[in-house]
Image 1: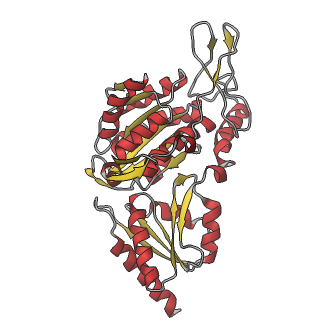
Image 2 (image 1 turned 120 degrees about the vertical axis):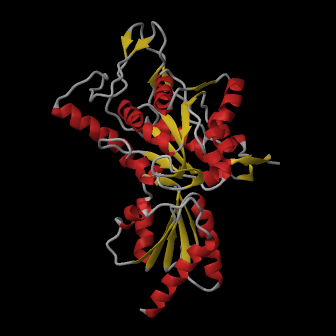
Image 3 (image 1 turned 180 degrees about the vertical axis):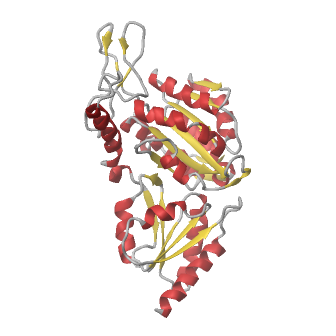
Amino acid sequence: MPERLLMQGNEACALGAIRAGCRFYGGYPITPSSEIAEVMARELPKVGGVFIQMEDEIASAAAIIGASLAGVKSMTATSGPGFSLMQEAIGYAVMTETPCVFVNVMRGGPSTGLPTQPAQGDIMQARWGTHGDHEIIALYPWSVGETYRLIITAFNYAEKYRTPVIFLMDEVLGHMRETFELPDEKEIVVIPRLQETQLEEEEIYTPFVEKDFGEPTPIPLVEMGKARFHVSGLVHDESGFPQSSFEVSDRLVRRLSNKIRIHADEIAMYDEYMTEDAEILVVAYGSVARSAIRAVKIARQSKVKVGLFRPISIWPVPATRLKELLSRVEAVLFAEMNLGQYAKEVLCLTKKSLKVKLVTKVGGVLITPEEILDGINELHLELKEL
């Protein structure tokens, strides 16, 4: 029989990360993510890992990048204000192709905002928080059980695509407790850290070569006398040493983008409910999607043809499937604990004239099923009047 556990979302995030092979955590406590650090501090030493509380979020982000470059899977966790401070380091990890995971348990903002209340205001920051043209992978679960499984996927994507991965949660998801079945060991796929150890003494390694990122690529094992390689946030050639020519710059930035962009359909993750005959499509993610699926079920009892699309990979957008659904429905409702950040992105995927409704909250309170149901019914009446 599968083991059944009662667990908090933040706890599931930490334990799932350890199962994924995370052995270094550098972080700074901040509500509502602090329980992740607490669990890591307790559990990492048991598996030979290292926990360190840094002086701030900037140092935390730098520490996990350094640990990863030294050959260890690494992670940090924070919330909005800390996530803002980490953006420069996230850009550095993109440029240096360093696999690591940044968890952001979202709370109300801007600034110090609402420390103990939920929000989804960092959706666009996860995509464009750091400067320059770049792609990012950002995943967002909706349950404690999915948090455990999906953080493993986040680490796998970091390894496969040699990139930082953003793992989004919200205060509701981080602090709620629910039961879930622990995945069987046979069900869990963990991509190991591949390390190049066959180098001759003092050989210079060139990890930034042109290649297809369909398979994991080795990161050199840094040991005295084994190998050395250059890491720089400056534009660099395949050796890692800075080069400022147009040709090198253009090739590098395009490659960093393409290694995620051309694999977007492989990375994309989503869930659907009753979309086959839907005339109205509800788009919701994270904790809000839990309210949305309840609203959809109630509306279906009244013969309203409505379905739910839940993006799990927020970035890259599951564009291929969304385009198909948007071409079939007549109206779309977005439920977000922000002012419609994801709505703008999704609506760019279609030129079709759709009725659009936003159900939004930014006051630190979860959107209820009743509020989403009211929006569905309003759209249903508008369609009947056509």
